Amino acid sequence: MRKTIIIEGRHCPKCGSVENQANYGFNRSGTQRCKCKNCNHIYTLQPKTRAYTEEIRQSAIKTYYAGVSGRGVGKIFGMSKANVYNWIKKTEQ
Image 1 (tube, one colour):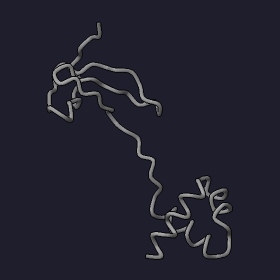
Image 2 (tube, rainbow, N blue to C red; image 1 turned 90 degrees about the horizontal axis):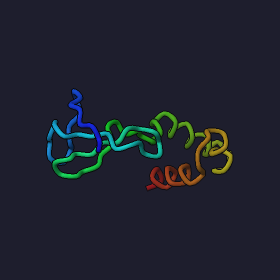
Image 3 (cartoon, one colour; image 1 turned 180 degrees about the horizontal axis):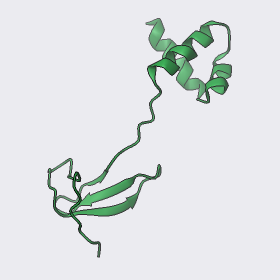
């Protein structure tokens, strides 16, 4: 049986309860997951964002329009070429 500890700042996003929040392991990226024992909702405390900043997007698009291929831009910035192509499609609209 899991221990129930009231930790400040921890609340269920579904029901808003502060009590009966139990640690429920870690997700694949390594952040702590919790389970609300009132409504059985499982949630992540501080989810990591995987978005690129606007500066990186703009510099990748500029590099592409400077003559580097989408695959080359992906290698330079350490990202998928699909990201680059999707960003270019959005700017062309």
